[in-house]
Image 1 (cartoon, rainbow, N blue to C red):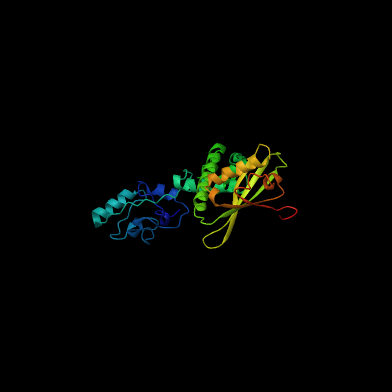
Image 2 (cartoon, rainbow, N blue to C red):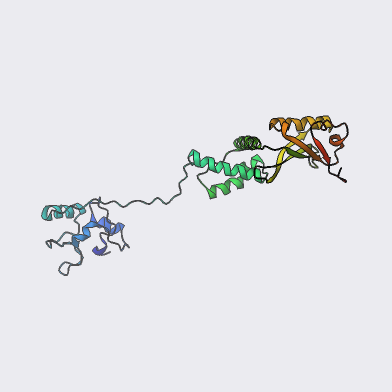
Length: 270
C-alpha cells in the first residue's frame, strides 16, 4: 500500500502511521486534516511524507503526533482532533414508553374483539413471532392482561352509550328476539333500540344480549328487559316493543302490556 493511502480514515489517536496504513488498506477517501499540510507525491521524495509549507521530509516511521508537533512548532498550525461517528447497525429493542405501549395495546384489543379471537391468542407462538417481526419493541400482554383490557374497553363503551342515550329527547322503541345457541344450547335474549336523533335520522343498535338461564316466561323476559331499561334510564322513554312469535311476550296476559305497545312480527303481522 502506498503512502497516498496513509491518511485514509487515519486514526488521529494512533502514534504510528504504518499502523494506520495497514488498518486502512483498500481505502480511497482522504479524510484526515493532515492531508492539507503533507504530501506523499513529491517528485524528489516519492512515497515519503513531505511538509507542504517548508518541504521538511518526515521519516516513514513518523507518528501523527510528530507531524502535528512539527506543524504547531514550525507553522503555528493546530490539527483538530476528529473522531468518526460510529453507526450502530442494530434495531432498538427498548420497550415503548407508556403512551406508545397503550396505543399498541388498544389496537390488539380492538382486533381481538372485532375478530372474536380468544384471549389466549396473544400467547400463540406464531402470533408472538409475527408481532416481534412487525414491532420488536412491543411487549405483548399475556391473556390475563388482555382480558382486563377488553373488560375495560367494554366498560368505557358502555358508559359512552349511556351518555349518548341520555341525549335522546324522544320516545324509543325496541325489538326483541329470543334464540338458543346450536353449539352450547344456551338461550339468549337480544334487545335492539330504535330512535330518531336530533337531526331526524333513524338510529338503531344492539343494546344488550342477555344470557337466559331461567324459564322463558313472560315474567322472566319482562324482568330481564326492564333491568336493561333501568340500567340505561330508558324506562320512561319506552314506547313500543316488537318481537317474533314469542307468545310469552305478546299474549293477552303479558306483563309487557302495561308499559309497551306490543307488535308481534312472525308469520303474520298483528
